[in-house]
Image (cartoon, rainbow, N blue to C red; front, side, top):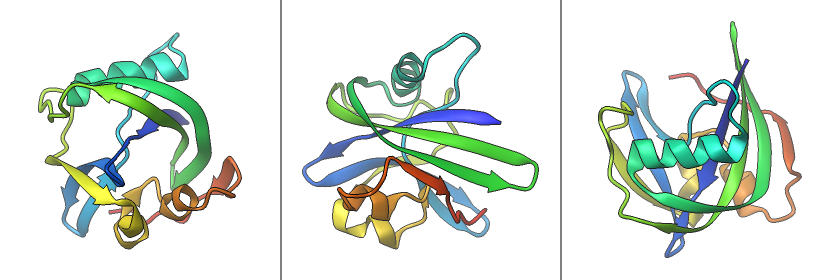
Length: 139
């Protein structure tokens, strides 16, 4: 099982995502990454944000926990609110295979292939913290 903390980073009503392209289509991923041995969720997320896109983020509360299951693979996602960030987000190709940073308008989160597929929950302030197992297309 993988544990993946990620950040919801909103600026001007747009969400920062990392775009990955696959043969079946593009996926827009909330920035974050996997824990290293002995790391906590927030320190791991802070490290990943600096390594992959060069920003420092003031992390706020845990927004959602969601599970994505594929055959032989299970990932638990912990999505934290980014209260504020410093630095200009830029892809570091030595740390990520993402093609580019894409800012997606909040209103369009449910129209793209977002990973994890939490667009509806992010828009609905009444959503529970634990979202259960998500129906996530595998590209």
